[in-house]
Image (cartoon, rainbow, N blue to C red; front, top):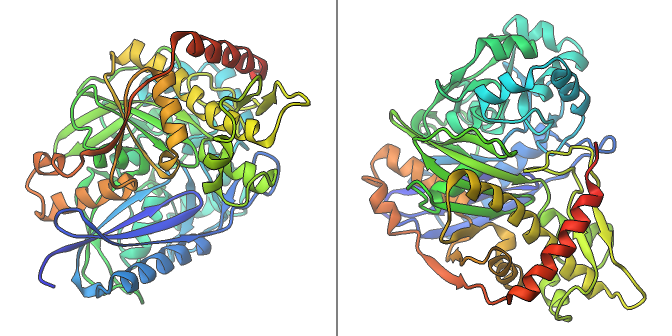
Length: 494
């Protein structure tokens, strides 16, 4: 096989997916390897470093075997990753502690203290983010404070910080490269958006030594080469890297200002490309780097819901309502609506635009007539309704939207996508390949090594396969919005 192939590694919250793609971004093979979630205390979420690394190894091996491709045929590697998850590791690559996952709420009190010190406005202006346990800096503060010898090792230069992409790059390059990309760096609370560099004032506020931080590069960049791995040959360039949501934005070819995508994974993440405009939200949205190619930086507004597909997993694992996540659509379709049942998916606090880390999920409106089908449908509706709250604010600050591009595992649910189009009153465009996160990582790597000449060539490869048009009447829409408003008001806390 003479064509150049790209390996995309999508390291997510519950597993790692590996894809092999050709020069037209056609998927030749795909494999996923799950790993355990660790919940040491209520609101705490962790991952073991060894579990993540094993999942990467297993996913790549299985993917190569499925598509009968030799590892020597891989011309480049692109990485997309769960953002904000915080790693502190020694020079030999071993973790000092379980990685603290982006969903973890253990630093809520740290965030409250920083707010009480009057620092939130400065931090938000520089970073485009809010002071919330979601982001990496307070997680790193916790590790430096609570893990034995962590601060001493960091100050001596013997321990390093990274998000998952940084740690994977470090492992893949035989511990030769300690670096990150600008999209992941923009989610740490430690990078100034206007300079795209680590900020000394922010580091001083958080008490974080600068010497433990990785170098920041653009997204289509020659980061390093594979070395010393049992499952990949030496010398393959790691040439593309982005946080999972920005990778999906790129994979959906949202290259122009005003284009928007929503990724339905564990959570739901809506990103609006604002081009060169660095819009600092006044209504609870986040501002991040969308992409950096060479010296050109584009920004985005983001609304983040911590729970989306994870709500369906809760139906499966927590309540036993379904045996497989894929069964939720069939169950929900057994009723024409959810009746009086409402569900607010605040199972890990409320994200944008509310930012209530202590909020709890709510299932209400239950009566003797309620069935598990009503509950299943209410869960799907709750996922879509929280997205509407984010989109309303996004349109106020970033302009009107004609359509939304959707991706991620949960967008395979036709009932959810139709309800989303109805509740937003704009079309939802679903691509043929739902793994647009991996697609974006592969495209960035392909750009770096010259497989793709420019973004225009990629635009042709990202066309919608399914279009969901709004059909809901105004009367029904108002009923849903009224029920949702009452429910969301009940879960907010002071």
